[in-house]
Image (cartoon, rainbow, N blue to C red):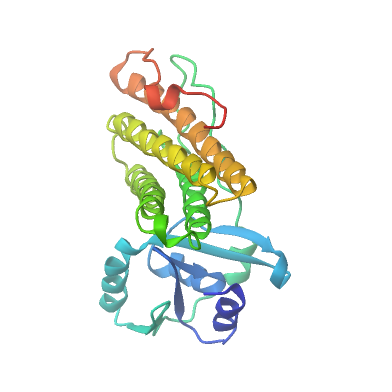
Length: 274
């Protein structure tokens, strides 16, 4: 759905939550995002200026696998849940809610990941809860997923349904895995299991990088697209490397032993384009 169409829905003035589909993800924009986090679930909200509509927009996103739980949450509250079209769901009956302007003004960028591990014996930051800071990685993976879908949307049919589908599946798997990991951390799950999950996620990212190189070498995507996607991939890997170091530090704190484990091979590879 085009940005202009989404904003037109949001400006209708109705007090409801509009969910709009972007391929394998659903999103809530502006006031719908405010009502969503106020009444349903506190997903990460992003905010940026979009030049073609000349205004700031705020949005949150989640994979299609979460839509069933969201429908249940809405119906349990006695609200309506209507599939208006393939790309639009309207949740009606939402109560009048004040505070939108204050919420809008308070939207900030996700916290930066700290690259250096904590000093041995240092007290953990209670404001962080000792949990992984995976939201920046999830946002980067989500944006990468959208760009991969757009880059492969018009490649020739000879490659679209095998190589193209594999690339899209890799990108989706990465975003969904980081989404689930970030919410497990927010729910207070122990961090020990995250080391293997981070390494597995990095493995999939490297497979994605190889296939994107193949797309370029077959002249299915341009050099600018290839360079941009590789830049996003490297940014994502840097976030995962940082989180792996932080996770090892937290595990060491839980076991009263300072971990000196090396990075897994998939996370140890540094810099450079494939």
